[in-house]
Image (cartoon, rainbow, N blue to C red; front, top):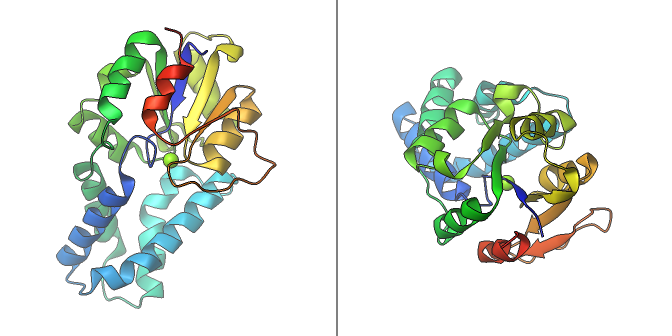
Length: 227
Ligand SMILES: [Mg+2]
């Protein structure tokens, strides 16, 4: 049983796939680039590779904003302004997408029973827009966004910020919940707190990952917190 929950945002409580798809379509439309759907896999590959570099500590999270479109424009040989694309895309990511079905009532119940922190590897301008638009502020006692802090999961720095913000609760009362093994699970385990893998699609984890709890729906989180 835990009194402190650290929650990931993207692909854990928020439908990031829908948000990215809508933002990308809008961005390509504005740039006059046809066949957005055919180009989306190239964008996704570039974006994932850059976030992996952030997780390894090789790139500052904020650098991703423009770099992914600079690479995308070159790789796809597009006659378009990558900075303008990056601006439009970031605006779209903030404006599109919703919480997963059932996430809001779980957040309501969790926040009434435990101390909650949102811990996200993302851009401040994107995540702050989503938090405001979806009214998430009231659920969380702390919000940690990697690009604002210059440190990203699995690095200890972002966890230090969270624990300081929450008034330094004991580590053994806390659990990190998220879908991403290399960021959420490795980050929580490295920091010395429990981990809960949100794995709705039945993926298999490498045995090296320290997974204390595994859930396939958010409702199961209620069983992890003190009643
Ligand atoms: Mg995630």
